[in-house]
Length: 523
Image (cartoon, rainbow, N blue to C red; front, side):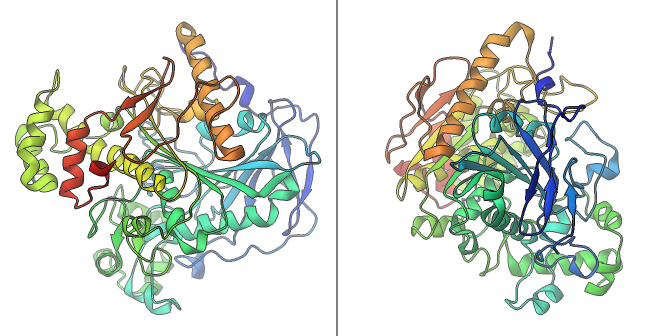
């Protein structure tokens, strides 16, 4: 039986008190939450709505307002393809979606004399969906632990990453794409300029994110425009590292601009004016669930491949936590479509001359099938290998902590799904750790003690890291920092935390070899 793990985190119907905060753009009236002492300010605009002529342009400063603006509900969520398909089993799908989506949210305890650490959350969703209104990301419980929590919306999908030759021609830098990353930078600048009004310390900001949010965190580590806007970073399942000439969720500008021009021709609007005139619903429907446009190496915002920048130490040298979940691929369609022939072809494309050895290693796993192996390949390629390598590379230039989340009873996977047990039972699936970090995990009555204890430990590690760059603190088992050559990860589940060897190390090392990236072998 699943209990109501979010009961204490909802909004109080009876607003016993509210708080008026004055930002540089105007006054905001917050709303009480059901967590005693925590106030939320929701739907705060940090940039002008990116609509009309501002579609596919860098975010513009928000215009100041007069009077007191009520900040008692989330802003519009970014458009996502699921909003048009009606599929609410595939992802959290808020009802209120709009191109006018550049808002953020703040949760804070009462102000005091000293400023508090700030934690800024960046959601995932493969850069094609996501929303700060997702109940997983309610920041009230974390804020009750003496921090200020911020979550932000950013443009996703074709509205967030579209590239086109005409866009490059109108750009002073001659680039296009990366608008969602620009949004994130604008939100971090808003935090720098305004968070002190909420009791937060602008000189003690931790960015943390999962999946595409973790990729985003890694981008911020190397993007020059992000320098100085944060002081610690946590990447949960992902980073844009790998083959130097291409990457998962990382593209090259010429090819992506050509794809943008082809997209315009396909839908009958080859020129930029025509594309900007289209209702966003048409663009979203035509684009669909596609990874055709995503962050790109543009020579400006992302100057070089992140791997090369990290290897050269050309990055923010801040403390980092990075990790992945044990069964990252379990929620995704298997590479190779679940057939032996399809798997063999895909593995040869990915691993080249090492494909035979990789297939042998996977076939030796108990219960291996083309479906399970295809999901393992997906998890390794997109999440596992990248997360481990990020922790290893950052350990060379700063302090790094590496983890693996193994807890296998974190249902449900999807908020508001028609079938609340849609996640595979017995898997530490992609995103399963989020509720334990935010303390929003629904509780199984038969597993109440272990789940509450895991929430306490994980949120404690994340909070301590946000406070001082070290996850360790009173009442928590010691988490050793990652040292080069160690090849061990800190296991987090219902058991006592402990360092464990990297699982499937040979398989992951062969992936690195195929990607011409030997960091994992070096440790």
